[in-house]
Image 1 (tube, rainbow, N blue to C red):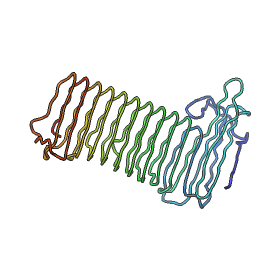
Image 2 (image 1 turned 60 degrees about the horizontal axis):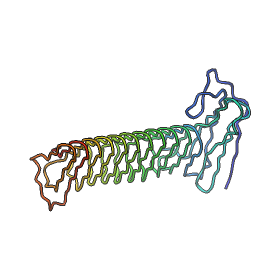
Image 3 (image 1 turned 180 degrees about the horizontal axis):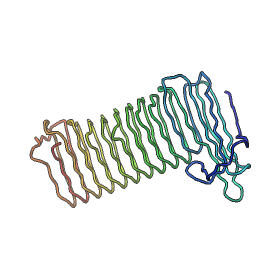
Image 4 (image 1 turned 180 degrees about the vertical axis):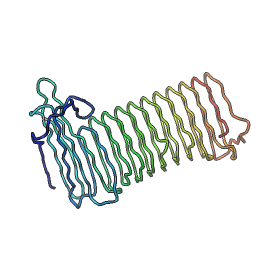
Length: 309
């Protein structure tokens, strides 16, 4: 294992305007550092606070740009670059805060080969990535995630406070926000799991098997191809529009309308129930309780409907 520890030197000029770190705006000094990871490195990990931006290239090697920000000489970021086997781990640490306003942090811009496995865990900042083709695991304690043009075998995106946007292709996709909306309208995946405690979920494309849920928000799927789909919200509407006949759909809301649109060319076992609302199954459907295709819609408080796509 090789460890390289670097502390920012006092050669950076004071910013003309107050420049923050992470999502804040109190820093007074900054310094940019650029370097390449060792040639044998094929996996990237990032730990620490600050924004992270990752792009891909057909060229070999991992290229890193770090922007250090600090507010006084006693709170300069310390950088660590640890190479173990084929993995490089980038991290940073700030000194203990002193009396007064002291802000410190590091943001990263990294270019990696397309097939590079990437893992990021940032405490306070957004994560943006494009073109990733390896395994992808991204988490922010406090920030949005925007991941586009995926070509990944698996992707796991999570944030405690922020929205998530994902598009591209991934064999398996797991999206979670504790407090924020989830958008996956341009995502193609064999298996999608999308969960949020407080926010809307909007998805489309293809999800062969999909399980989506929100405790407080609406769920909407437009132009979706899915074989098996479960959608559940405790407080909000559900609106699903499928382009091909599914094997199974289950859509429920504790407080909101539920509407499912599917093609009518196949027979379905359909159930629609509402404790406090209207129930509609369009007459265009051929209903067959023994069919291998089923649609179940339910609301405790709201209208429910199964309609032609």
